[in-house]
Image (tube, rainbow, N blue to C red; front, side, top):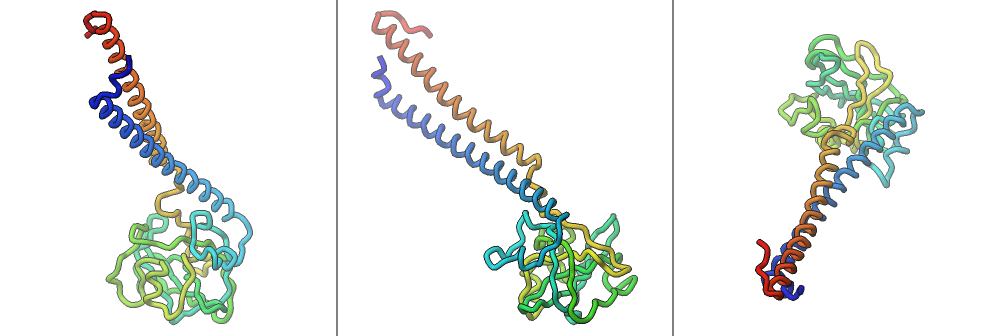
Length: 261
């Protein structure tokens, strides 16, 4: 009764059905992976928020040789770093908004004993660089700075400027941009100092681009996962239904009956 499945028409139809099922399962699995990735990001961000309230640890314990880059689980981590401020290479980062006001960051490299420097944002000042209150001088000699580790900025970060700024200003805080203006290597990311001199204001922790991961887009990924799996199930259901219908028609023909339309 099921010999019709070996005909070219049904072999081709079955092959198309199997291909459709495989595609649906692959797309569903991919969307599920995207959802799980966003959940992991949310979990790591939550861990970072908890770590932010914990005691500060040396920067070298967070950014290690095995893991030299800032991740979602280390953004906002309270760290300490010891070194000397390089005031000759101090930079102003314009276009930064705080409490609805335009201003700029004051970034002073802090050179450490290993020859590298940490990009320390000593605070935020209102107005455009070169206007308003003068930027307070950085402390001389060896100092220990405590602050919160921030992720490197990119072209999509709030306030970031691609280029075209005068000397002494920086549009984006990242190792890729700092390497062009500093004569020594730098740690990944930057540090927002907790204790800042007046009239500067402490810079709050900047959430990584893309949020904490568990957003509406994450649940859209989960919805798409269910849709693709349902599509795969629908293909299986339709294949069995058509096979059953064809088998019943073949049985009717064998009995000399007209197949039911």
